[in-house]
Image (cartoon, rainbow, N blue to C red; front, side, top):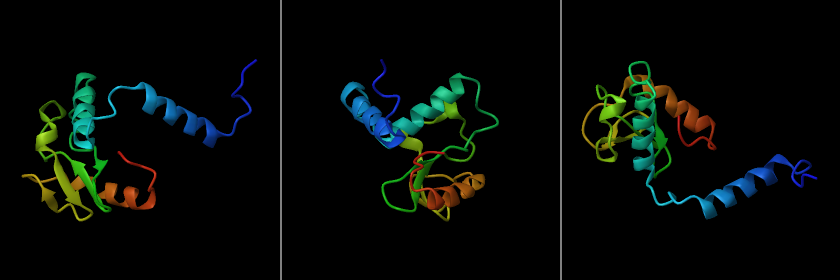
Amino acid sequence: MAKTLALPKEQLVKQALTQMQNTLADNTWTDRQKLALTCRILFENGHDSGLAGQITARGPQPGTYYTQQLGLGFDEISASNLLLVNEDLEVLEGHGMPNPANRFHSWVYRARPDVNCI
């Protein structure tokens, strides 16, 4: 008989997170590295022209997030060329211009503190 069918969702999520932290080996990757890898995976699966510049991850300080430089495709993204921007898309770290279409990400992050990547 299954032991988890009657458990509340919150408990199941907590158990899954604990299991992932104890089992998965990539817990040492930085958020920048994870975002760059996400871009590369998307590119390898044919997602570049329609989504280029449309992915972000929360930054280290409230109201900041990482994104790509406008004009770079997912296949060109590395952890070192990502931009750290504020909610006004002003570059705090890195060189280049962020995609202006990412402005709505600021509103999503502000409204949804549980969301860490868009």
